[in-house]
Structures are given as structure tokens and as C-alpha cells.
Amino acid sequence: MPQLSQRVELFTDSVIRRMTRISEQYGAINLSQGYPDFDPPKPMLDRLAQVAYEGPHQYSITFGAQNLREALADKHGKAIGRRVDPNREVLVTCGGTEAMMSAMMTVCNPGDKVIVFSPFYENYGADAILSGADPIYIPLVPPEFDFDRSALEDAFRQGAKAIIVCNPSNPTGKVFTREELTFIGELARKYDAFVITDEVYEHIVFAPYEHVRMASLPGMYERTITCNSLSKTYSITGWRLGWLIGPAEVV
Image 1: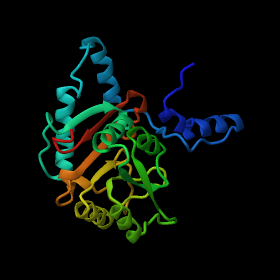
Image 2: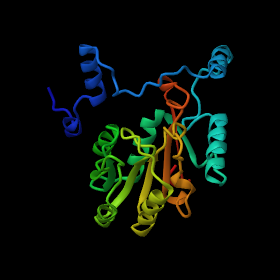
Image 3: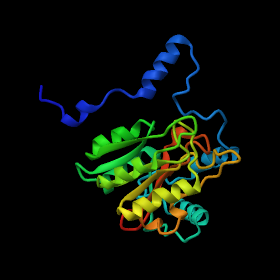
Image 4: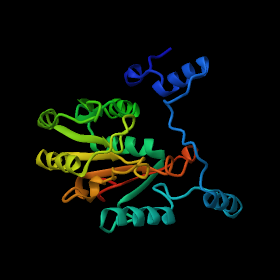
């Protein structure tokens, strides 16, 4: 039999899948999988039932239905205080996972360096492998999950093409402060790097913390790719509705 690609030799099975099997084996509480513990909003389910009979059910525009892109552009634009062009700055994807993968494949060439805060959502490692990027891990140190600012700047000095910021963070729950994000953004501008954010938990934030969007900070929209999804906010992980929003030349 011919050899498989060298790329797949670097993969193991999913850590989430592995831990789910173990939890089922021992009857443990499974904290590895991001299942919301609430039902989707009834208006969404009612509308889903309606459109099941209304259609259309055939191929749509590959980068997302017009009405969905317009809604996403309106929502994100209000949140960051600027107009977002639904036709040039929004891409609908198969969940947040494809949004992140698309972002990485778009900005990274094989051998480029990408900064990743650790611990991290396991797909970021797979994204780096598939895009050919070399990750530079920066620890988030408990109990506050702060990071060493000099270590972060040193990572940028090594020529990092991008940094991935999951905010609020999976799996630590850390909510990056405005001051921390401003510092990260200043380094991204200083060393001419992209910031790829995963903001799927943007609405699951509790006082006294607040969610600050990287793209809302001065000078950051032009180099920020925001990845998000409806999965966690609306408890519809199986619908696989994600998107990324960023500068037109990136999208």
C-alpha cells in the first residue's frame, strides 16, 4: 500500500474524544467536551421548522448566505464601533473550527512561526500542522493565567507571523483585559504580525470581567482576523455555523 502523507503522521486521535471515552468507561463527569447545558432558543427552533418547508435547499453562495453575512456584519460592526462590509469582510464557515483553519491557511506559509498561548484548545495544534506553521508556546501561568510579557515580545522578535488569542480562553476560562489586549496589539503592530482571535465564548463572561474585542482597539482592525460561531452562545454546536471577519484582502 502507498504511504500516507507525512502530514497525517503527526496527528493522534482527538484528546477530547479520548477523554470522552475514558469518562464513559468510568462513569465520570466529562469536562472535556463543550456541550452547553441549555436548550437552543425557542424562536430559533421555530424558525428552523419553518424554513425546512420554505427552502431553498440547494447550493448557496460559497462564502455564506447574503442575509446571514449582513446580520453578522451588523452585529460585529456595532460591537467594534465601525462599519463591516458584509460582501468583502465576512466569510461564513463550517463552525469556528473551519474559520480558524481558514485563517491559518490564509496567513501562514510552511515554516512561518505562530504564537499560541498554552494551555490551548487542541485544534490550534492541528491547525499549525496543516498550515505548516511552527508554534511558539507562551504559558498562561495559574492561578490568574497571566503571561510573561518579555517572553511574549521575545516570541515576536523571532519573526512570528501571527498570534492566536482565544478570548475568553478555552480551556482556562481566562478573560484577557483591555490592557493585556492593548499590549498584545502593540507588539503585533511593532513586529508587523496578524492577530487571529477565537471569540466563540464572547457572551459567556461574568462580572466583573468584560469581553473586549481585539478588532475594536486602535489600529487593530486591519491586522485582526476574528473567528466566531453560534455554537456556544445559542447551544447549537451541531449546526456548525461559524464565520470569520477581517480586512477585505484577508477575507
